[in-house]
Length: 413
Ligand SMILES: Cc1ncc(COP(=O)(O)O)c(C=O)c1O
Image (cartoon, rainbow, N blue to C red; front, top):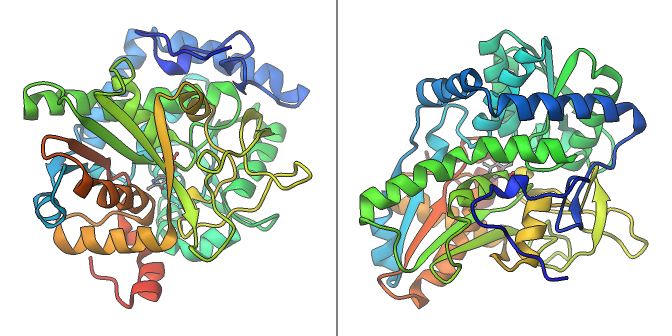
């Protein structure tokens, strides 16, 4: 059966009654004890989406707390340096918390309040989801617990300090690879035992169906702004537009693309860049680029890195936010429908892209979006001058200062 995207309906809603996109991806593969809390959350979210006071509140916080829209800026120096396509950046890292994760945190905390919950718990890899959840929970008077792998606690220290400053409890996860995948597992395990009092905030468009939907609904704010900004800037949607976004779990890219879903891909191309890992290693975090098989991870069916026995495979990436074996079911669907193209960039390519962008322009992308800049740098010289490339610069580099100092010799912001 060939898969198709329906026009005029948000992709987050194009799943079947089992919560699956294209009958293959997503779903709710959860223990019996979570069925009822998940059903309750589904009902509440579907009611709140239609509730004008909820939407007003969401927009109030997006406008007055996040401060929308984030800037869309031309990267003139790099464009001149590379030749070819015009390169632009949507500087989502200007948000409080320096990443796109703030949208998901706000929507979830608003839901938690309406559900009468006093506690929120969440996972984090790069620390961006954790930091923004800690910030918003504090603002809304909710107690916050963040699960984070020990490897990531060490490599993303500035964000761990920030979470603590905002009053969150950071729970070190010592199981498995001690990275994002284990943080998500541990957080879900905690929620199984505490779902009556605590609201779960999954940090990306992953997990059981409802968490994919809430996160995608939240990050869609990025493309709602972007489509208006592009029309203001160019007078219309350019004839050749490429939207480049890094893919870890897939929340920034879904949010960056969602308002453009109905455009023909020959006009608006979506390019997702996964983590290719260290150049000399066989390990990576790029299930879509490497044609991984479908498996179940964190309650959902998706393309997932597996070993020869079908066990979840190890990953490696310089970016803690990308070090994840799976990928959102939304992206699996976008891959199979061929609406989006997926590729990867290595650690080394991300580092040199970071170096070029931060030395030539007034932005300093974290190593996650640096993967997307690496692809822009690769393709721009081969493209015509009327092609417009926009990269979602969805995170700030400060959290990566220790890694950058070690790998490149210095870190200057
Ligand atoms: C700055 C930044 N960009 C990208 C990602 C990848 O996640 P996603 O694909 O859900 O946007 C992360 C994850 O932590 C991140 O912190």
